[in-house]
Length: 231
Image (cartoon, rainbow, N blue to C red):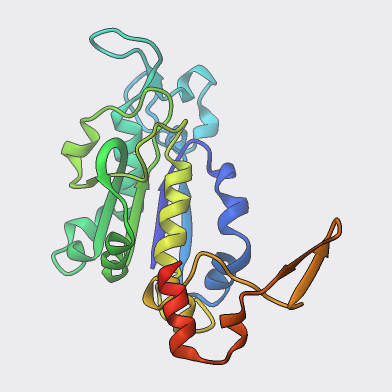
């Protein structure tokens, strides 16, 4: 599975996806994470795409502009995003053989709530593109150029789409066979309590003793599962 991130701030994502379980998943070749900066896909004043973004001035690399209809903040222009998506999966989207294996995600507070059940459905795709907005958002015409789904990771507004992208990458990846050490490590597939304990059985802090619940020491699996369900 390849995760394609369309983002102005890939450096904010790299430390997280480059460590722990996600790092090992990449080392095993189970997933790949690629980054596309919209600034690398701008056009020059003559309307042509330069061979390299290094040919452009700082002002020419800007991808944000004032919103039509007024309002505060700036909006990311459509064409740099469209060209970035084209670079990531353009050929696959146009192919009848691979089109159904591509999913493009547009992060929006008005999108469908991301859940464990939704994450499970994403396992069938070979390429997932995350369009990470910033500022006041991205020109909505991007969604007309490419079919995509609007997704929200919660009932709140974030500074950008990078955090939601990391959440989705993490949630989807841990469901792929071979990523976690054992299938039962996916908590939602088993009876799991939000409260967990480890050795020692008794700890002491400021003169007070804290013990592991007796049921977890009983060895009675049915009773332990019932305790976990109640938690």
